Amino acid sequence: MPNTIYMKDNFWIAAFMIFGYFSCTAQHKNSTDFVPKGYIVFDKSFGDLNKDGQEDCILIIKGTNKDNIVINRFDEKVDRNRRGIIILFKTQESYQLVTMNYNCFFSENEDGGVYFPPELLVKVERGNLIIHYAHGRYGFWRYTFRYQDANFKLIGYDESSGGIVISKELSINFLTKKKLIRENTNENAVGGDEVFKETWSKIAINELILLSEIKDFEEFRIPY
Picture 1 (cartoon, rainbow, N blue to C red):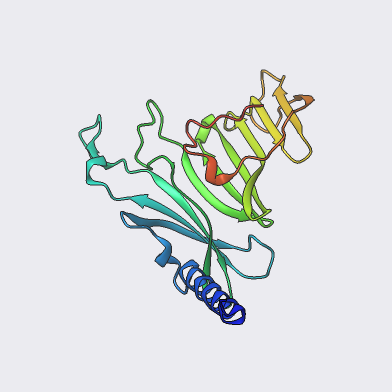
Picture 2: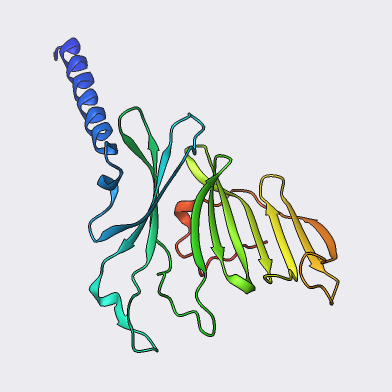
């Protein structure tokens, strides 16, 4: 008959070793240790995303595939490698990987047609992760993610059409399940004097969208 105590001891020793291995691989002192092979750090920002008083790290990474370095319509050599995001929580002496999405953003050198491509801005506001696309006189759109249930979930979406003179605004709160549309009714507005008509409605949503699930922000459409 097997020695039960011996087997239990071996089980806990093995479990401890496995736990220790994954803990070590999940945490590093340097944030750049989490950048996968074939990528470089494009941008880096900091902010407290889990409300523990520590400055967490947001890495915007960019691919380095030489096949994506092309000649654009202006006969310029441009890097069209896509960009992605890695979020790291700060612990006392290291960083811990929380989530990643390696190719969800277009290149900063995308062809914007008759206008420049939207500028990607990533920052932390009030403990939330903000992904903001600024498009000059065409307006902007932004996504608000909050860390909850061990994931970054989309809790808000906002967009604005027009630059100096706003023609239309959209705001969706996925927590309250409400949508607001504001339309400017002052055709002679010059900026700051818009008169908005507000329309509220409810949205039907069962689960919040995860940051890690959005494959391509350019193709991603808010389904509400």
